[in-house]
Length: 303
Image 1 (cartoon, helix red, strand yellow):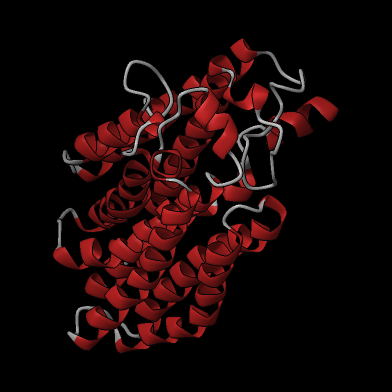
Image 2 (cartoon, rainbow, N blue to C red):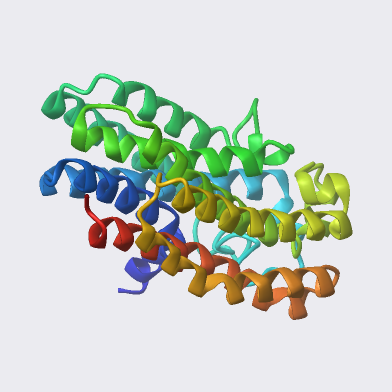
C-alpha cells in the first residue's frame, strides 16, 4: 500500500490540471462549433495528455537528479524542487526513468489509436511534437528546460498543442479560434513554471540551468511575470470584444483580482522564498480557474 502511494505521488498529480484544462477547452470549442462530442475520444485524449505530463514530470525528476539540481536544492517548496523522491532515496533513478518512458509509450499508443479511429493524420504531428518537447525538456542533448526556451516550450505544449489537438480529434479540422483561445491558457501555464523557478534559483544557477529567471535575475523576471499574467487577460478581453470568444467568457474577469495579487506578491517578494509562496499558489489557481471558466463559457454560449 505504501509503495502504491509513492508511485501515485511520483508523477505529481496535483499539477495534472496543466493537461486537463487545455484538453477540456479544445473539446468545448469543438462542441461549440459542431454541437456534438465523441466522449470516448475525449476520454482517450485526456488520458493521453495526462500520461504525457506524467512522463514529463517523471523524466524531469530523473534528469534533474542526474544533473545534481534536485540534490543540492536546499529550498524545495510544494510547487518547486521536484517530487523529492529521488534525493530522499524513496525510489531508484532507473525506476523513475522507466516509469516516465512507459508513460510516453502509452501516450503514443493512445495517439495511434486516435489516428486510426478518426483518420486524423495530423495527430502524428501533434503527438510527436508533444512527446518530443516533454522528453527533451530535461533530457540530453537538448535539455530545453535548462535554457531560456523552457517556459516557451511549456506554454506551447500545454497551450496551442493540446487545445488544437483536442479540437482536431473532435472535428478533424484545424481552426484559428482554438488557437487564439489557447494563447492565454498557454501563457498562464508557462507562468506556473516561471514563478516556480524563483525558489530554485540558487540550485539552478549552481548546476548550469540557464532558464529565464537565472539568465535575467529575479527582479527583472518578476516584472516580466507581472506583465505576462496581465497579458493573458488582455488577450481574453480583446478576443471577446472582437467576437472571437463567447461574450460569456468575460466572466473570467472575476479571477483578475487573484492575478493582480499574484503579480504584486511576485514584485514585492521575488527574493523571499516563503513570502513568495502565495504567488506560486495563486498562479496555479488562476490557470485552473481561468481555463475552467473559459471552457464553461463555450458550453454556456454555444452558437
